[in-house]
Length: 322
Image (cartoon, helix red, strand yellow):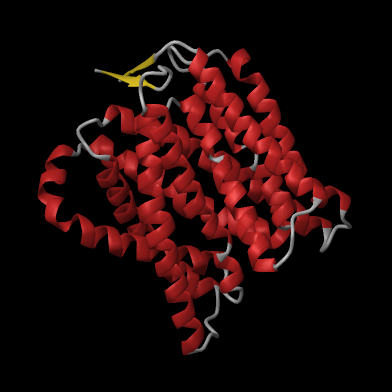
């Protein structure tokens, strides 16, 4: 079985994939606002609220097709769902939230900004993938954009102890590794499991992620004292439900659809849209205009994506063998 991937000017696969990647980034960017809306809750509590909601919604949506889907899944598929749910959702979100709280948004953005580079380099090793040399301009532009986004973390005085900053840096690197593994593994699973729709795969991931979130409830109760009033818990529930629907259910479905339309070397570049929209939402939240460095980062990120598209359009049609 082979799947034709974008590269032919006569097909719409590239543009549909780009639209899906753009939509996923726009919805995923909302995740960065969630901690600001419920600042009194810990990263683990935020993760449990978001992914328990994701799991419940996924279970409700998948009920009509549950028996049919169960018959199509093997033990290997369930193992893949388990580690993908953990690496791309549970572990990544906890590490990301901890990095932001310990090291700051700027430092975390700088490290996470190298996700496209990591995924693209790994994708370039796939059979019939576009040569890495052709993607070098795009990767350099991407890296320059990430440096602009995080430069303020270097220029500004360090807030907090050096040990706290180091914890933030380690968590940010861990989040980078965790989501890189998820992006690569998820794309390859979607190519292999052509008998499942991208939407069903997302809902199955949601069910497994929800189960992991519920399993973490006793850990949270023992490690983090509950001192919030009913109003705060209602606010957490509302934010968790909103993020689950927009970012996890709809955003992930768009990402999975995009992952089937574009080669892995382009999938990596689509992660940049999350960073762009997170910055845009941050400007609106803080009611300010972007700085010179932030404007430069926007320009470099856009140039990186356009350069990647141009490189793939010049590359012959690629087939991924599953």
